[in-house]
Image (cartoon, rainbow, N blue to C red; front, side):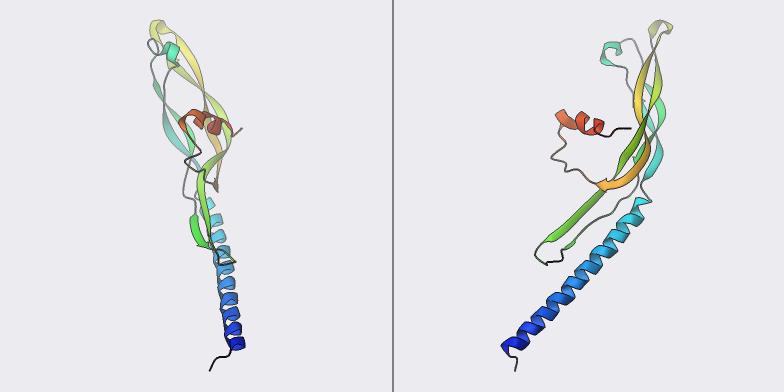
Length: 148
């Protein structure tokens, strides 16, 4: 027959085992995130560059080879160490350093205009932004928050 003190000891041992398992899982998952970071890197991509609105009728868009961030990053959920809630980690392949390149657009009458566009120089897995935070009217602010 199990006494109250035996029951308490058993419950404490179970909690201790679960806590150690939870910490071990988090360490394993964090190691996995670091391994995935090697898959996030700068890759070539083709961009469609439009002329500014004031030149839209007289200048033509063009395709240009540029660089962007691409790859896989880890995401996971696990029980936290105190066993009362879930720890959630979501990482995305994001730009950390950028450069600026010049694009020449052809216009009527043999004229040309220059457009400056950003390109990726360095990428890394970072915490993802909540989609609800990024709304149409502040998307440019989020994109401009990353400085070269």
